[in-house]
Image (cartoon, rainbow, N blue to C red; front, side):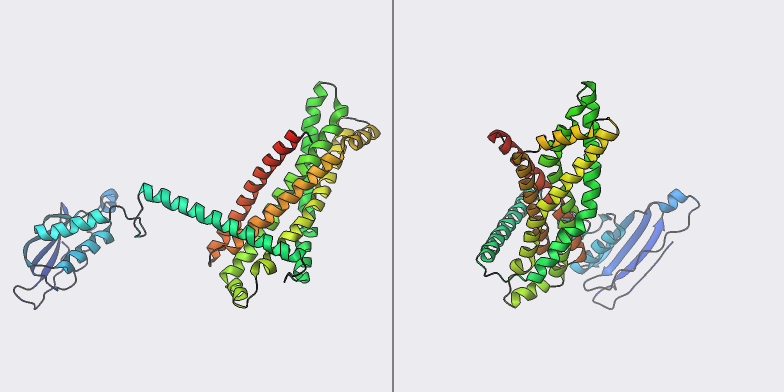
Length: 384
């Protein structure tokens, strides 16, 4: 039997608390006047049991307050805290009605609480909060786009505050530093397209059309799409991490306090660098993809080299090349905007910076897919 007892020199009989353990569990016996009484003694440690399942099972806790003469809300608060610490409800059948009513009210009020102590909103409230968050994100994106357009307009008029050193640094980080990954992925994707396409054309005895398939597919669609996705994972994530870290360290607030526009100083160089480098990387990716297709056609399916080159030159038209470069530029700008937008609106912790980086990549890929679908449908409807 675990037992504890405390006394109080207050009015009437002294406040007493005694723990007992029996077959039904732990029992707390309260007696005396508990108005402004002492703290409840902690429950005793459970007695050793030879049965491991019995030892692991939490003991039921009963509170017997039949001998209480007086009590106040302090005692109710202590019993409620005891219940929360043990993570189990107390058996309060032997408590006075007033004290039991206060504990029942506390239990009903906390029924919707989450484990961290915050109240869980109802389903209608959650829908409202979700739409409110979506509206806030949309508003921030539109405001960011407007600020960026104003910064571009100021740059075209020659009154921008953007520094040339920042622009040169971003050009290097976006273009030459991305060449290795662009080369590798473009070569492998061109290889896959050529091999899969040739396997289908071979059934019809039309291997000679491999050049048309690979050239048009890579130049018009694949090179721009793969370049945009690679830039989203490499450059867009870096933009979000850089600006998010500056936001967490209050460096962006410092720029605003000095009267400097962070969009012109931080965002504009990155967006312009991406707009200039994305079409160049798309062109490079298309060339690498076509070379991979040539290796497959000549080396595996024995297509004549001169015949492949001739058909490739005939397949490339100004419309295909222009559409591919336009898509690559649009994808690059969207990647830069997604990265900078998430970085500028990141929180002020390391976790928030990580979340902004992830959100930038996801948002950039979603924007790329939406833009690709819209542009493809538009150009097809125009007959280009």
